[in-house]
Image (cartoon, rainbow over all chains, first blue to last red; front, top):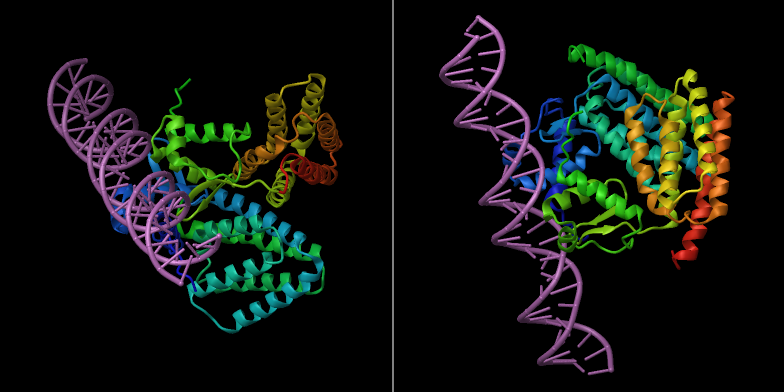
Length: 218
Length: 218
DNA sequence: ATTCAGTATACTGTATACAGAAGTGAAGGG
DNA sequence: CCCTTCACTTCTGTATACAGTATACTGAAT
């Protein structure tokens, strides 16, 4: 194994995204570069570079002259992102060779079953969901697409946090996951894509309701 | 009218993208920050920030420890990007309210007609194509989608340069544009999306052939 | 009491300086 | 003659310093 050198900027990026995923920052607040850099123990230069990089992913907003701020969380933003990622994952399935689809369906089903069997922590839930979607897109030869999807998925973390703890919502999502796997197992690509899009679009009202409950006046 | 303040980084970004679109840099070469910053008359800091920003768009690659380089141009990269943007523009059409589709079709047809009437310079051709695609996505309420599509479109500029000067290729593309407009005018959304995807996917072999002709061993 | 001007402060945007890694080439050993 | 090694150069990655803008505050005038 070769030691992988990592630049400060990259470390900062992952650190920030981890914290965002953990809900550590209040979305909508603006970012004080000095205090954040001190908190992370780095200088402003790599921090700014990391923020610029992340601002392309939609988690951070930049206002000219006023610096960066945590992108406000909102129903609109979530809906737009979901529409895009649903289309992209559908594309990934369409690009997957037919011979691969059944195998992926099989693995997805196994994974979904394994998950429902063992109740898990919040982190486990996220990891499982990420694995599910990564597996879903794994058959597509379009690497750039995979990267884009992963990036969107990461940006949606801050919304998915709202799921955690709500058994009902999670149960429905799990059922939808199984529906996708079954459609793939049956080699019914259109049905799988439809189920996939339904899974994403169903999540919109669920999350929005959770948002309204937690954050008044979104 | 309010004076629009623009930060150096933003100016650098557009400047670089313009030059990339003009084919000023050899793709695959690595970027010397010092010489480029001197050439642009700025310091390395805003230049680096611009490069980081652009590297998210696929025009610039970053190798840890070795700095930035112009993303190598290649058939694979182009194909992958086209698949994605085709899906996203199709999504934009699907999200457009039905009432808007006919209007957009009308405007597209008008624009296409106006274009074929007046033969134009290379820059005009790019502008027209951009306007066409911007108009195509203008009916979708998903602003983030519009931004993403625009960003991809910009990244594909360096490939589209290969079109310029080839009357045959351009003629075929123009015909496809008109087919899209007609389908929209007829309120036939699926046909429009199919024509749109065909337009994009047809461009792949065209561009790849042009690539092979100009750049040996891609 | 309110509003506006003026000033002070805090923070971003940019430039410069420094440190360390990657590349380069010549000298020496096999 | 080829390969290795070591010094040297070049360039990136990071830190710090400087400049300019936005914001908050104070005080005076209406």
